[in-house]
Length: 345
Image 1 (cartoon, helix red, strand yellow):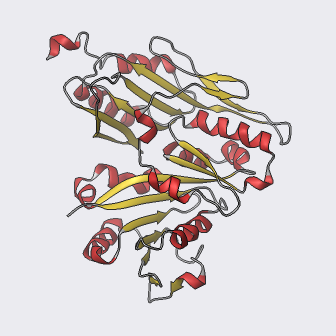
Image 2 (cartoon, one colour):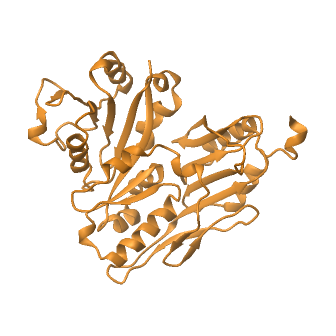
Image 3 (tube, helix red, strand yellow):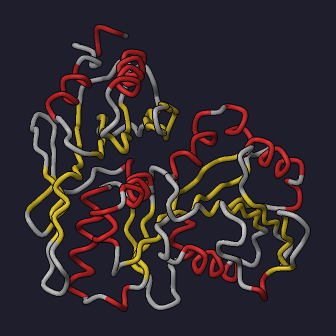
């Protein structure tokens, strides 16, 4: 049987996750949702959408199932799988201070879970008015943005149009491969969000991101990095100089086994200041892209889409964290490159 589709909904406290979730449930009436909430009672689904059940299980009036997340996620997923005929799509709403990587971990690294549950997208809801302060003070906000595939700017009516443009640049600097969408009133771009899947932006060449203080870019053979600096005429200025994003590109074929070994050693010994590593890997031994990503101190390397015949094949890796040593990362990845791919076939 085909794996069930999963969406992870994240975002800092008060960003509007439950409001967006309600809009999804209301706007996608043909989809039967199973919904996992991290904390029962913290935020509830609108009363008109639910029928309260016993314990931690709630039946929605459109036939959906809502469960609270407990310590034994595997048991919960097994229970949902046993009831798979009664629902179509699983949404997990994380708490406002949760690291989504921890929740995504089994969906990305456990083969048994992956056979039944396909994590399609991670959506981060962002409070446009407060996110700058949150980025400065709360590492959880950085982790949520760094791990997401789609960033939805919410409550945008509270900021100026000029600042909104600047904010989009800031968020794209943190996570250049995420799709940044802007909510408009109660229009949360639901169809757009659910039409997109993980890694969609990985498969295209990212353009340089223009930020208030310059251009973020890193091409093959050129090593640059830029700290995230935010400024706005309508808001207080906040400098997030410890948040950095590096994008590395390599046209040479990469040895996937060596890459896996190097990354595992790095994660065990040196990953304390790194929030996220993810990338598309080109190896001439595979017809498909390899998708690399770190999930906490774990590593997941999976097959992505097949390379097209006329497509430029290259490796693109993004590292997000603090006090990043760009030349150190470049040296590590270059040790994984084949000196001459033609000689390795």
